[in-house]
Length: 341
Image (cartoon, rainbow, N blue to C red; front, top):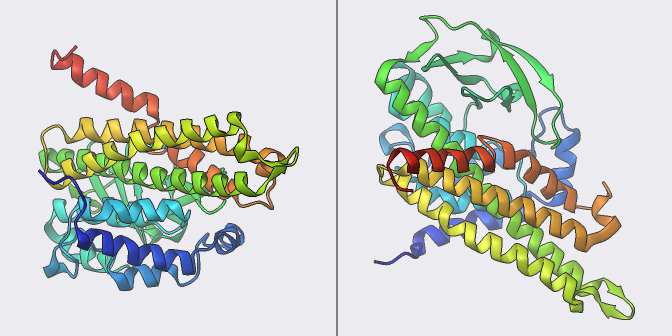
């Protein structure tokens, strides 16, 4: 069996990487912190032109008809550049959710969401705040195991503080009704379960990208920063810090790819794989952020430096859609229930 990504998948990743390197520089991410919408101007439109928001939508609905495995590398690149665009929420979660619930809601919303023409935000059970709700026209919300779709004019938003200035959070107040309900019963429960798994895997992929970028910038810093007449990268303690982070990232990344494969093939144990991926990626990115900060020293704490852009996104995403501890507990509960331990 060939476990490698295909040339087409790698080529698509490279195209997105080139776009983000050009359009999503640290300076532009920093500027997004002070913008009202928290976004990089023109970046979402450029991603939509490549077809990224609609990768998992059927071709008949204007999408690319691709799978979670095709998307995972692009989400990793999204994390690498700390891009503030809602790629995971839109491409990895909202589009498949609308596709799976079907019906009138899918007919109305799937095509414009997949085209990137309207913004969408997700509020699933267990999450007290909704990311990106302030810039969304459509909100997909969960209540008592049902999926509801509301326009932004039908909800009340209360802004909340966020460690990441480009990741805007809101408390959403709304009233479920028969007119807002788009899925109920077994269809809704299965779609919501898959949505939570996709959110966990998509966020895990972003965390892998964040960790890889923090490693790269820290290695570069260690080569140029001198102490006692030598690059700090030549010191054994610094080497150990970076080696620990690299090992954690390289152990976590395959679990994220495996989880994406399980989602793409609707594997029976895809939820376990999603939780394994989120737990490992959260731990790896958190560790890498700590090691990067230690190696940078005082400059790592400075707002004027770039490291905080990736660290703060890491801190935000490590706890989003379930932290490492909750996902390890989920894996343990599944194993105990199955008599696996």
